[in-house]
Length: 557
Image (cartoon, rainbow, N blue to C red; front, side):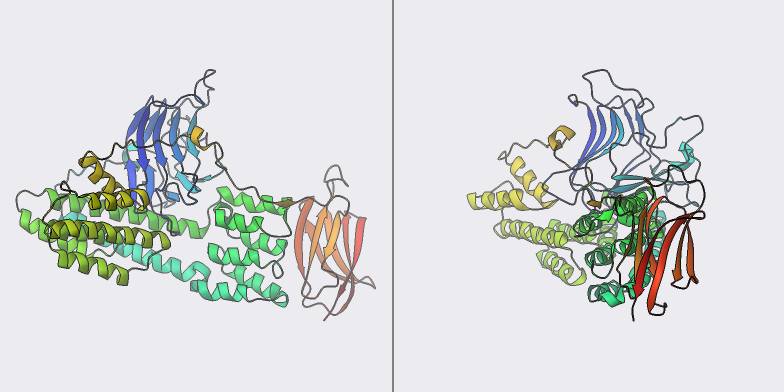
C-alpha cells in the first residue's frame, strides 16, 4: 500500500449515540472517510455512526473503518441503513467511486469502496441502476465483515437522499412533532422486538439451555428453533457451549435458522471453542448467513433508523434553542425542559453542563445522582459515568475556590492529566482541551491507517472437521435413544449426480420406516428416533436402485 496523504474526514470515537455523516461529496481523495476506533454502541445496540447518502468520486478508499488493536469492540453502527420498502430513504444511499474496478499503477494505493478492519456491520443498498452508474452497490469490499443487503427500492438522489438543511421555518414546532412521532415508533418497535427475542424471556431460555442434559436434546433443539430467527447471542453462545446436549448437526440447524449468527464475533468465537469441530459442509451453510437478513436484524435496523431520525430532530431543536437571539430566556427554559424530559444519558450529561454554566451545583449533583438510579449502565457506560463524576468534581473544586480552568495549580494539572491518561470519551477530550488551553499539551490527533494494523484479523478462523473420506457413511450415536445423526460424503463415490440419492431406514424384516431424498452429495442431518420401538434398524444410502452402504443401528428405551 502506498502512502495515504489526502483524507477527507477522520471520525475518531464519536461514541454510541446515533450520529451520521450525511450527503457530502468527496472527490480525488486517498481516503474519503476514515472512521477509527469506537464509533458504535458497545452494549449490543445497533446505534452509532452511520455513513449515509455521501457521493464518492475518484477516491482510492471511499469508506475506511479502522480500529485500535487493544479494543475488541470498535467500528461503526452495526446497521448502515435499513430495509423499509415504504421508505425510499431507508437504505444507506451512498454512491461509490466509479472506477474502482481498474487496478492502480504499480506503487500506488489499492482501491476499495469499503475497507473494514473493525466489527461487522450490515450495509443496505438500493437497486443498482442498469447503466451501472451511479454505483449504489459496493462491489469492492475488502472484508467479509461487511454484509451487503439488497433493498428493492429504485435509487433517485433527490428523493432517496433529500437535503436536511431546514428551509421550512417551522422550528421548533415541526421538530417537536417529529420527536414525538419517532419516540412513539421507537417504543412500539422496541416492545415488539423484546417480545420476540428469545420468546420475550432471554434469562429463562438461557437458563433452560444451560441446565439441560443429554436426554433433553430434541426438546431443546425444538425450543430454540421455535424462537428462531429471534435468538439472542446470549442464548446462542450458551447453546453452542452445551456440546453434550446439542451436537454439531443440531447447532448447525439453529445457527442457519438465525442468519445473524454468522455476523457475530462472539458466536463464532464460541463455535471455535467446541471440542468437536463443525464439519466443513455445515460450516458453509452457517456462513451463508453473512449476506442474509434475518427478521430480527431487519427490525433492529428499523429501530436504529428511527433513533437516528429522533437524534436529528433532537439536535436541530437544541441548536434552535441555543441560537435564538429574539427570546433567549424562553428558549433557554425550553432547552432545560427538553433535556430534563429526554431520558437518555447524553441529554442528562448535557443538562448537567447547563446547570454548571449557571453555577447551580446543587442541580448538577441531582442530575448526576439520578442517572445512577434511572439508567441501567453497561460496563462501558459505568466507566464513562465514573469519568464524568470525576470531571465534574474537578470543575466543582475550581468553582468553590473561585478559579477558572485557566488558573490551574499543580494538583489540578495532575488530576486533569489522570483523566487524559485513563478516561473514556468524551471526558478524555474535555481534559485534553483544558491542558491545550493552558499550553500544557501539544496534541496531534492520531490517524489509524491499514499499515498500522497489519496484524488485525479479518475474521476469526473457525475450526472445521475434515469431511468424511474413509468412513464416508457414519451413523451416531449407536446405540441411540432420541436421535441419530447421519453423516455422508459421496464425492469420492460418484463422479456426477446422475440419479437420485436416497436414504432409508428399515426394520430387519425389510419394512420401510422412513425414506428421504437427499439433494446434496455431502451433508449431515438428524433423524428423530424418539418414537421408534426399541430394536435394530437398517440405515442405508443408495444411488437410484444401487445400494452404496448400510449401517445397523440399535434404538433403545
